[in-house]
Image: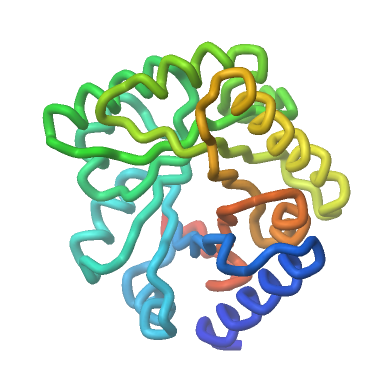
Length: 230
């Protein structure tokens, strides 16, 4: 199948998953994860009408964004090292992977210097997986309260990356836990956190059923990645 056909298939699956739980497809943002793919491949998705892309590495954003249409929106979904914050901020509509208060403070400071108002999500390690980045639940109330007071940063919600499991039902509890945590934080802090970034190619249907507002889909759109490119 072509990238255009893959996009149509994924969009139909998004609609079906949303409908199963009484939601609308318009409530869910599909982020096409283009990591390792060159500009000419990404352009096929653009030609099919897609406009929102996600990258894991700052270097790929710095290479691809200037080479493509200014109408596109780019999300950084991978880990952000503090020393790369200044380079990447002008190119990102949203940073999903803010995993410490220190990083949020740095983004806010540099954004002020650059005259930017970046949107961010706090990455949560719901499963407490030592192999994953992210904040733990008990630290979030104070961090959400502090980040919400920053002048430049716009805190929009939470993100998680559970450990891979081919069975989406084994991952579903982590998605439900992030939604429940978001609801608790909204109540305890008074901070609205409308966005939940969770779900990838193999499990985005379960994520949508559990409340995802942003899903990060790569291989179901572009095919299996060639990591020799990265």
